[in-house]
Length: 147
Image 1 (cartoon, one colour):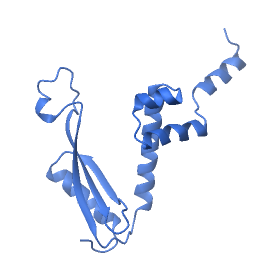
Image 2 (cartoon, one colour):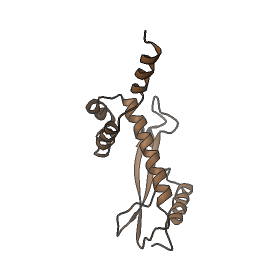
Image 3 (cartoon, one colour):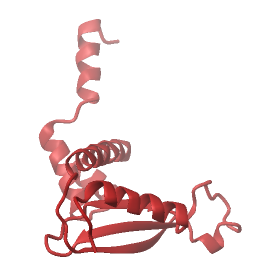
Image 4 (cartoon, helix red, strand yellow):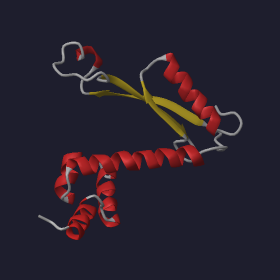
């Protein structure tokens, strides 16, 4: 049984990653390493890696949303990328344990062809509502017209 002082220092150390460990984990993820491989290399649990990934993703999204405003982009290329969550849309009905959000996903991406900056992106279904929301977000970030 731990006394109060020892218990407090034990639980504090268990819930806080050092800056160098966070940098290591994010660097491995950016290089394309899988979640499970990162857990083995970094020596942390998969829940820790997942939580850090979610936190870093939210921070990056907030930063991009705040700073990517009034951009001067003369030529913007827009594309969509198909992927799926759990299984493909056509096999969702026959899947044994498919979650409610299983199926096809589309990532809409805008790319400034001169600077290679990605001023806007959106993940959703391939429908009119998502496309309109994506273009509306693009318009809010670009100063003037873009082609």
